[in-house]
Structures are given as structure tokens and as C-alpha cells.
Image (tube, rainbow, N blue to C red):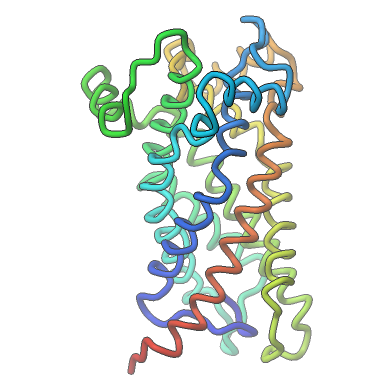
Length: 296
């Protein structure tokens, strides 16, 4: 990832990123579920949930603990290739942006992160997130329609075609692009600050996790409004919105500016843990692969 860490050999970045993404989503999904439910809960309805605890309580009462994992399959199937695309694209782009000494500065990491975020948004994240949001929204309805992952995907495509899995593409690109730009910029900047003039200095996994959590928090405060818009445009009521701008306008007009930060607390918890876990696992798996995966 930078000159102070073992960089992945050719082909390792995508594999390592996929492993890290799969482990992370299994750990953090309940916070993603709660965040999505709160973002879908419109004030005008009136709201079904009074807060995070109430959302968790109602879900467990109505669906058991397994209810907090509704939609996990769509994210699990998508998280592995998503992280693979993210880290693979970042490493590919960063190879052109590093200095002669192999160092990657903050500005370059921001641009490489932006490219990685756009790539994962188009190839993986938009269809994955659309399916996840529809599954979670469906569970909250009075008569759930989807009996499982494959049945749900089949029904979505039957009713809306492949376009039905690409709802909210514009806000997804904006969200993922800004997400990874912010995270990789903060992560690289913190690493460069810690390493100083000693590029061979080792960074302990706990410190890598702390840096990752800070990077995750920065991205949450930086782009939660985009996440709310994306969630609304991918829900079962997406037909109400003509475009990204129209969705933002309706939220502001009907619910006020604070509605753009719905789900911030559960998202903050999930993202900080998400980014910390992914970066730690990524770094540690790279170390293992560099010992067993020998290339010329």
C-alpha cells in the first residue's frame, strides 16, 4: 500500500481484497441493516422506528435475530468481488502514481481511490446495493414478496429487467467514488505521517485499524447525504423519484435537511469497523501471500 508496507505482488491485490471484504461483511452486517431501515423510514409515513434500539427490538421481535441479517446474502456475494475490484484497481492506478522511490502521496492516493470507487460502483456495488435495499425494504412491508436471494433477484429482474438492479447508479458512483477517495487519502496521509523519514518502519495491525477507523469516519461525515439519496432511489418506492436531484429535492422539501443524515450513527459504527477490519486483514494477508506466493 505504501513504501512502509509490503506491497502486494501482481495478482495479489484483488485476491487479498476479496478475502478481506468477505470476512468484514459477515461481522458488520447488522449495523448496515439498521442503517438502511432508518434511511428508508420516511417522516411523512409516519416513521416506524423511534431510533436504533427500537429498530433492533422490532426486527428481533418480528423476525428473530436472523432478521438482522436480511439481505446479507446480496452483500456477501457482492462484497468479495467489490473489495477485489477496489484494491485491484487502486493498486493498478497507484503503480502509475508512485514516485521513483515507490512512495504514494495523499493527492495521488485520493485520485487513485476515486478511480477505485467509480470502478466498484459500476461493476459491483450498484446492483448489489439495489438488491440489498429492496430485500430489507421488502421485509418491512406488510406482505413480503421475496423468499430468498435468488427468488428475489429473479422477481426484480422479471418485473423491472436488468435496469431494476441498477437503480440509483448516479448517487452510487458519487458515493463510492467519494468514499474511496476520502478513505485512501486519509489512510495514506496517516501512514506517511507515521512513517516519516523511515519508510521501512513497521506499522502494528492495531495502529492500522485505528488509521482505518479514522478514514472510515471521515468518509461517513463527508458523504452520508449521498448514501441517503442512494438508499431512497434503490428502495421499493424508487418510482417516486425522477432523478438524483429530484430525490434530494423531495427529501429536503418533505423532511428537512437533517433527513440527509438519517442512519449516520449506525453507519458510522459499521463503516469505522468495516474500514479498520478490511485494511488490517488486507495488510496481514498480503504479508502471508508474499511469503508463499513467489513471482519472478
